Length: 180
Image 1 (cartoon, one colour):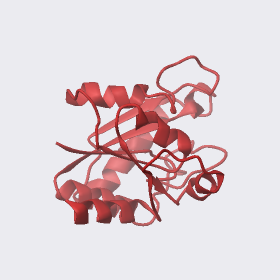
Image 2 (cartoon, helix red, strand yellow):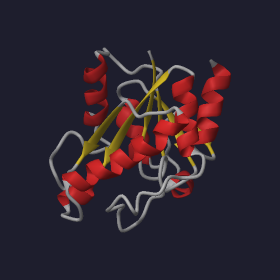
Image 3 (cartoon, helix red, strand yellow):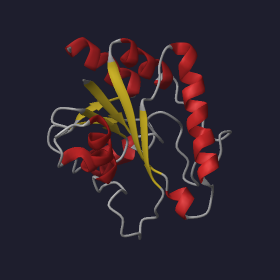
Image 4 (cartoon, one colour):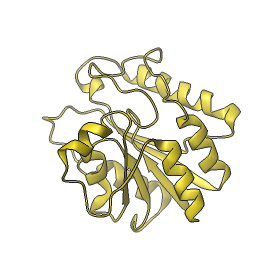
């Protein structure tokens, strides 16, 4: 199985400092949906692992989160793409959960869903350090995009060893397809 794991906000859609709280605020980044479709058409299975602390903060509910994800799938469908699995953490930063990135719980859920023993070599794409750290212990290959919080993350430094840096998701997928 060729598996690709993506963060959501800042990778697939525009991020907001005040949180993406509704389907109307969920706006895809230019080229991101086409990138997912290209990966799918090339035989990749695409999963998303996303922190959604807006739920825990009371900014939106589960039905609204589902509506955002339904919008994502609806926009991908005519392009020939789909997100096969979306894992999400509803907890705030002070919660003692194991799923909030940089912890690896969302990635473990992905492993369990697909019956994988590890994620060695699986590309994991994010725009923040915690996105990259979450899969690191499980062997993912980190990719940082410069969209969303990517430029700030790059400026801070301290990226995991071997992190590849690309302008956006479209560039990541093009590289992956070229390197196959």
